[in-house]
Image 1 (cartoon, rainbow, N blue to C red):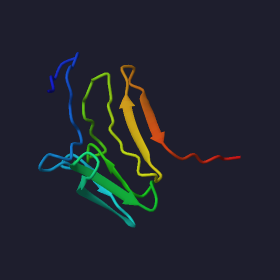
Image 2 (image 1 turned 30 degrees about the vertical axis):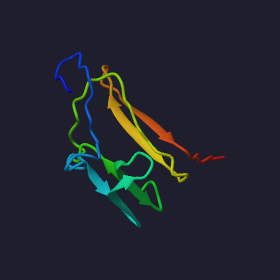
Image 3 (image 1 turned 45 degrees about the vertical axis):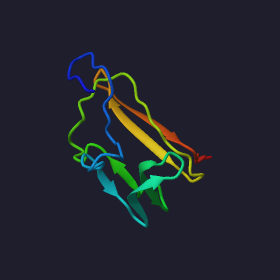
Image 4 (image 1 turned 180 degrees about the horizontal axis):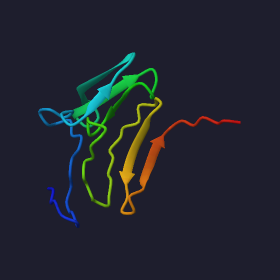
Length: 114
């Protein structure tokens, strides 16, 4: 459910593998890897799999046009991510109510610059 108002409620699915065109709002960059929809054995449901040699060169981004925004003002983000015991990074760029861009990043690796 999605209500377009200042106080949005419900859920808005941006990437949902079950739909007929799950990447229709997304752009992708795949270099030395693959992006495909397959059925996950654990949940017995379609999922999106993106695998590549370098997380900086293999990604999907939404909206596809980097000069636009999704215009979502919901206060909660829910991610369902399966650990494949491989390096992973997920970033979300948010424009807050003070018009400041905030970047949230989740990853399972760290680079130390000494």
